[in-house]
Image (cartoon, rainbow, N blue to C red; front, side, top):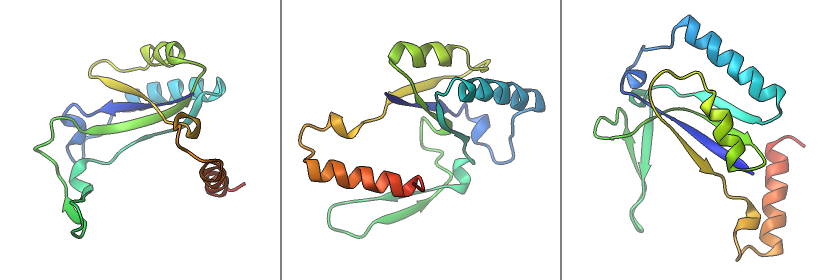
Length: 138
């Protein structure tokens, strides 16, 4: 099963120009290397601050509206993420307990698989699998 690990911003991490120290980058690099060697890391990235982001808001039949960052009114912003492939919830928890964070909070969310949707027809499942293969360059 796949999990998205959401690294939450502490406010400072969302300030333009604020970057981790060299020591923090090295620690994170070592941790990422462990995840890769164990075969559980599918993706993992830090994100630019919300001041460089945008949101698209949808409302009924009206045209989608683009709102530029920063999103100061937001209580929670995302600083980065991992996508991990693990055997169960206990495994992702154990990995993330070892993450080299000194402060803050992360959120773990299971990623839906096509099989999780009881109303997905065989045609929908096949179509989605084909799209994923194309996206992965297979």
